[in-house]
Amino acid sequence: MLVNSKEVLIKAEKNRYAVGQYNINNMEWTKAVLEVAQANKSPVIIGVSEGAAKYMGGYKAVAMMVEGMDQSLKITVPVILHLDHGTSFASCKDAIDAGFTSVMIDGSHESIKNNVKVTRKVVEYAAKFDVSVEAEVGTVGGTEDGITGGVNYASLDECLAISKTGIDSLAASLGSVHGHYEGEPNLGFAEMEQYSKATKLPLVLHGGSGIPDEMIAKAISAGEAKINVNTEIQENFAKGIRQYIEEKKDLTGTGYDPRKIIGTYAYVNMKKVVQTKIDLFGTAKKA
Ligand code: 13P
Image (cartoon, rainbow, N blue to C red; front, side):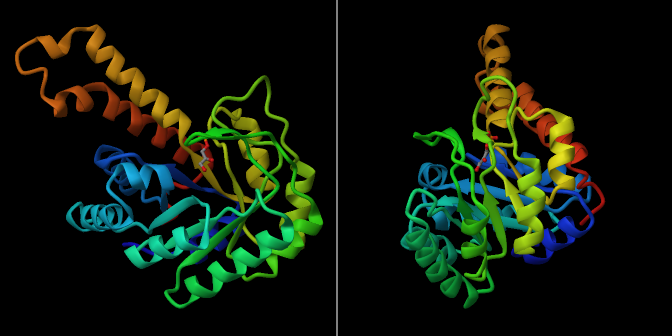
């Protein structure tokens, strides 16, 4: 069942758990995420970056694949198809027109004035289709899809300004990074609590890979209701492929079958990561 993120995240924030956004790269990713979510009766957010959408053939191809799989696998839990880090109004519009139920407009690299302006434009367009909108203030550090930047903590003023655009969730960057952390993450828990109360919006934690479990629990109790996970799934997929090749399974019988190459370890590993996160974020039986 494809839905927007509005009610799902309000419910999560109120009951102090977080819904995972799992970024996908292909059919196997999508299936793995949907199957684990369904088995756990957990709501789930399928994250698609602009680069990943392009890789998979464009927004329409992705939307049809996710919708088709949702139907043929008889998924009954809420599934949110979300554009991750939309860089422009045009990109968000394309995703919405293709059938995405949620978009992120990331104007965080602009001045707050321009960020508010583009976010408002996306909110107005999204409202016509009942699509939810996430915005970002401050900047998430690290590298994602070739875009690299340093950490820049969001301020209360920026959060208040962007919250007035009518967004449904807010990625207020407070020390998290995409990809690997150098040392311990330095997350602003006090600010999370403050911004969550001041904006009354569910907060979004980007860079969910590699954050120690106790920090995730603290972040959720401080107002983070959506947590994005990408790198850990990618790494465990790669590990599974490596194991298969190192064991020379591709050279035995019909081991060259791509369903075996991906299905034997990589697919299982991806599912394990999603299961671990659902357990950690407390999303099981919340559908
Ligand atoms: P990680 O790659 O660090 O898990 O971050 C994912 C993310 O925030 C996607 O927007």
